[in-house]
Figure 1 (cartoon, rainbow, N blue to C red):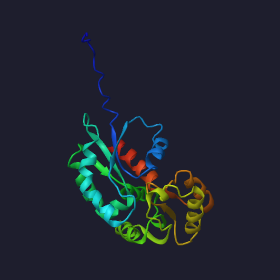
Figure 2 (cartoon, rainbow, N blue to C red):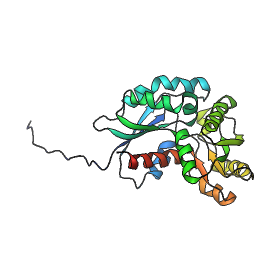
Figure 3 (tube, rainbow, N blue to C red):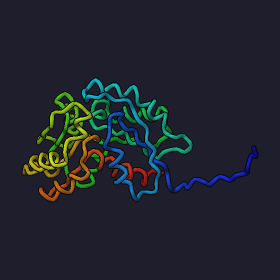
Length: 237
């Protein structure tokens, strides 16, 4: 056997890696992120966090304990400007500040975002605050989610849900069902935008169809998170 010489390529300091923590049960966020980040130069590294087959406040709260271990599995060769935690409802139960604290325990990162925090930032960028909320969740999950948005100044008074707790069914809710439900909610004159909640709900193809029907901005968990991560990645020093 011969030991052969090699050289090392330097890292480009202008292209920082991004991290993403994905729920074990999530089948949607990675395919949608491949589309949303298709032209982005920054590498996106993904870790998984244990999550329940059903979405309820107990399974969501458990992820607070598991976040440091999940963040610890991201590559450590370079620091991160931004890491995204891909769960809207858990972020409302755990709290965005606590999510950031738990990720930073084991990951060298400047800022941590999540779909809740990202949607608030995206809404501010668009200048909208009165939303129709479409959720797949059961009511014990919807209540803290709506409360969390309200605390950030976003009204979700117009609200509809598919009432589904099983993740394997949430991911398979049809695009047509999402479009029809969101169009119905978004047509309300009391709202100026629509938010499609849940990273496991397939929304990317639905967004332009809904916007064409109602003439209002439509945000989703994955679209908002991707937008905010990219914005933070470019703005952090």
